[in-house]
Length: 448
Image (tube, rainbow, N blue to C red; front, side):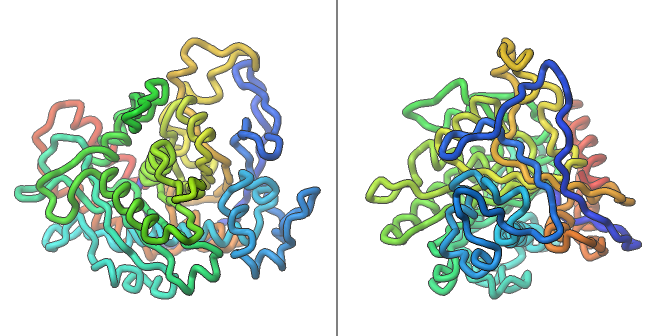
């Protein structure tokens, strides 16, 4: 589930964002759209892209396109999902579109800066230091400063290379500058995660079984379950890593708590963005922060948490989804309707297979995976190269230029390095690990 693959012969792609007709099935519950200020019951709102993307004025009297385009600071809470993006997704509001693109570009930084050169001292880590990374990838004017790098450890006992730790760089934490605060209307803490690149991460992705999250020691909520591989990646630790200490979870909770305390007298937002596997970690982090109550200031006011998920798979069961909604975690899922990763895990046993006849909950409903949040569905069609269906830069390009998308070849270097990395590994593993790795290689080779 990594970032860039592009065709060698660029061809135009006509994008379409569609609102497909629902399938008529006795197993699919028909649910009305949510009322304002209530917990949303329907979380798959598919966008209809119109020629002039404006903000529909209704009884809520939201700002017009011209007003919102120049005044993010005045409407940032709505853009961050305070009202579940009601009237902002269909049609897609231009200010929201710009914010989705902006956060998506922060995620692409994780791919551009990831070092896949086995001869490098920073192999499987970031190529650049925290002070220089954004400038090195062409985002020097973004108005954020990186404060911490994040490392994760796949809980898979596979030797990667002699003398190499299992932990690898997976993302970073950044905070907006004083100048950027004026534009955004608040101090924004952003956490970004890349998708899958290495073999152990692929194997972790195929651990498709639900397990209790149990992230809150005071209330473990055994009914709230998440996918085992994602949870292990989030909570596992590698004491041999010289760059990062503690699990991915420990690093993140410590750094976010520190930043919140540093800016405790200001208005703050927490934005978590990720692509593919990274979007799963983003959702786990957002849930974890809210469940522990870390998103509260000294006045006990909640700091809003928003997840921008790009091409993300399902993470947990229906109880996990419901708990995220109770905690006020806002999730905007940007997906390609043709992307198979967004339909996993739980291809069969999912949110559409829980209720019989729209009325009776089936016994296995607690074991069904469920997507969280509002869905913005893109439709990549006339796509000669199917590998683009999961590509992050294709997602961003389609949002940036919806009428015509030229697929370019500027992502070949990362792909070639990833393939060299995979082909150069020697594994002494059990048969199931071989099988999972081979499937990972196959999927990665076609970039899905």
